Length: 327
Image (cartoon, rainbow, N blue to C red; front, side, top):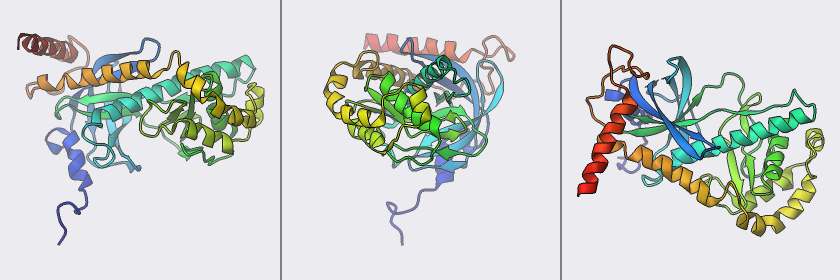
């Protein structure tokens, strides 16, 4: 007879915790989106509906099909990514979701710089895009979190991983990883490049000091591993990137200076962004109530007089903070 500890996890039962009453139906959410330029999170109410069975599974997360309606009131097909309970501890739970959003958004910012550099060199056909990812808090499911991003349709390919392995011979993804290292002055390297065509998702960022960007950040060892495998292709040369051999030789020597001279992407700024998002999500949980109107519109003043969710939560949060101040 199996002990409770060895009993296989009932995945469908676990994922039903992310749907009201364990049924796949619409529920209200709060979307947190990170802005690299301001280092701040914006919040917007949304309406979501999650399947109760996974679409796909990785080593750490399940992917679940999700219908998403944001502030523009357009229904879209998204993927909700849920961390497996044995992949992150209860303490790490919230942090893991905000780590993912910050990492992918920063990688997206680097992708925009890559596209700009390509255009400057008359390489208009060369471009990459990181899917926009956000954190969605499920208002009607005890404030549970998921990562959310548009669903990619097509053949999914992984080009390199965070251990330095190059899995395809395509030029663009590996040149992009190389470019990220030079753009940051040796501070970071974007890897684990995967997706459909030139639309990428789930990247990993290694930083020279080994801090920030989640549990997959292998620090300088991860950066070195990439350059030990990478051979500069024609795109690297046309972008004017330093030869991979030179980058690999200089990377170890640059570790100390890169870690001590971080400017826009230092550990302090990263932690500030991460903690801000976690705080905003965690402070909502005490004020979530079962009285939130079902199927309320994400847009204030519409849907038959339904309250604007963000305004309601803001008012309740204020009451909670006022009560705490008096205690």
